[in-house]
Image (cartoon, rainbow, N blue to C red; front, side):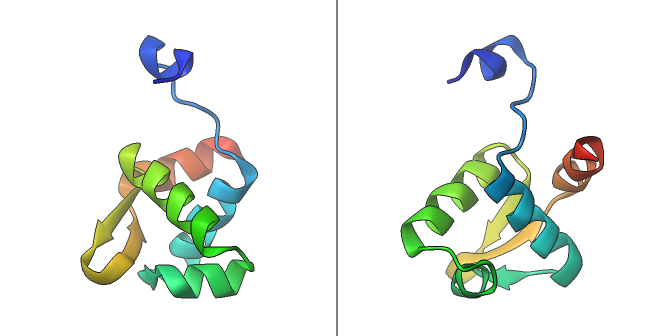
Length: 81
C-alpha cells in the first residue's frame, strides 16, 4: 500500500492508466487483448495496469478479461483534466 493510499488520498493516474481509462470511456467494454493492440502495449503491462485500476475501483473486470470503466473511473478522469 502506498503512502497516498494509506492516507486516503488517491494516487494520481499514471499516463498509461489515463490512456486505458480514456479508451474505456470512449469505446465501452474492451477485451484486454484489444486494449493491448489499440494502445500498443505489452501483455504484461496491460495486465498489470488493468489489475491496478480494478483494485482501485476505476475499472471493473468481467468475464474473460473484459474491462469497463466505472463511475469512479470517470470521476477520476474528469479530475485529471
